[in-house]
Length: 189
Image (cartoon, rainbow, N blue to C red; front, side, top):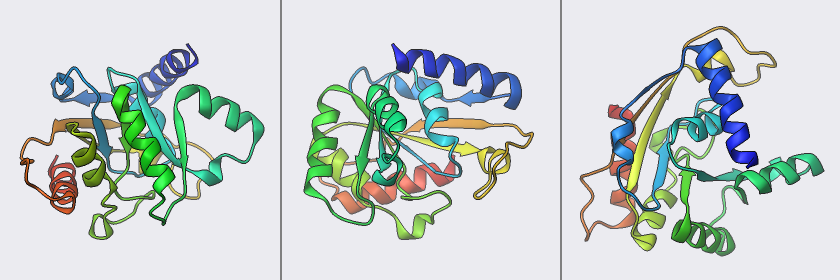
């Protein structure tokens, strides 16, 4: 319930104030859990992806966000999963794989806002291969202008999100190849 209320409020804000435009929603015709892999430009990106996805998605987020009791309460109820960044944590991997059995999962392969795809986090490939789920790529534009890194206030701007299913993955691809194909799809949107 809290997830739906939150996405409805965020949708209204994104649509009214930032003229949100969404393309490629037909990519979501998979009918089962999927990985939603997106570029990451701003703190606005996680709620934006929740708004743009026609299905509920769980989120992987840095554990540093889970310090405030109110944040902990809210994040747990809307499906945010804390992870330790920069470490190959078995508990994080198990949690993500368990999540993908029932729900879709949002991942930012860059690992951090404005991160380079040249230093790609290979987790998206590993999880897709292990969970045997499709990957839907998303490219966000505009959120870095509206809420740039270090900014305390929102600026005027326009947000666009484009989706495309990563359809060139083969069964025998290794997880590194899957991650690279995902990153290439995002970059080419």
